[in-house]
Image (cartoon, rainbow, N blue to C red; front, side, top):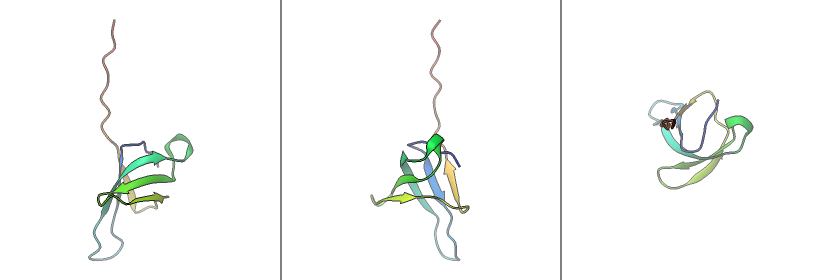
Length: 69
């Protein structure tokens, strides 16, 4: 798993009735974009997470800057 600050971390609910959780990755603490990640949930709480197989990184679209001649 590889992520960058600004990406979103989606963690699927593990049981019936448990909702998916979405958090913004605010800091990557591992080498080369690997966990652990410091994330901020929608309610403002921040946590340090090493996501498991029930999590997916949604990469923030990165705009390409045009090269100047």
